Length: 204
Image (tube, rainbow, N blue to C red):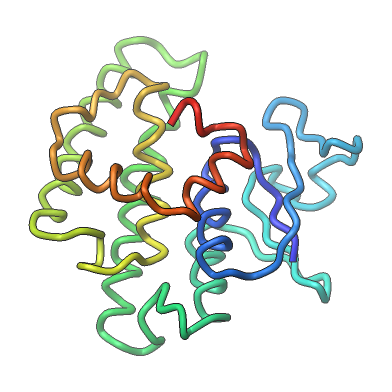
């Protein structure tokens, strides 16, 4: 398998999950600025949307969208219990988390990474994000991870998106449950390995 990624982007989530899964894979970097691979290939020939992540299987099939990719990876190694079994109530709870992260948190950062966005719009975006992160913090009360005591693919996504706060002036330091969650994630070897591979360990 190949994972097309950009350093520190949302592709960090499936990168972490691949390492948690113990599956063999190759990393292929795509520049967010030039939309080219390191070998000069136009990334739009891989994904017409020009966005990461993209998971390419050995048979040439490609899957986009992080929440779909991490569930696919989890289902390849059910013994690792990275996601509850398909069809169970817990699996839908996992999907609930993934959809919340992608629609309310991930997309909430978009205005903050847009240099053309007016400052008053960015202020409003930060306020909305803080309210959503407060909701995530509340849901982590009494839990080590999003789904309870054990790691799941949703944790990789939440950790990734929360890490953007320091780059976008979204101060999450007052959210004690989220901070404890981030510390637990940083202690995981797969997380540290993914951060190191992307050159992010020093800034995490």
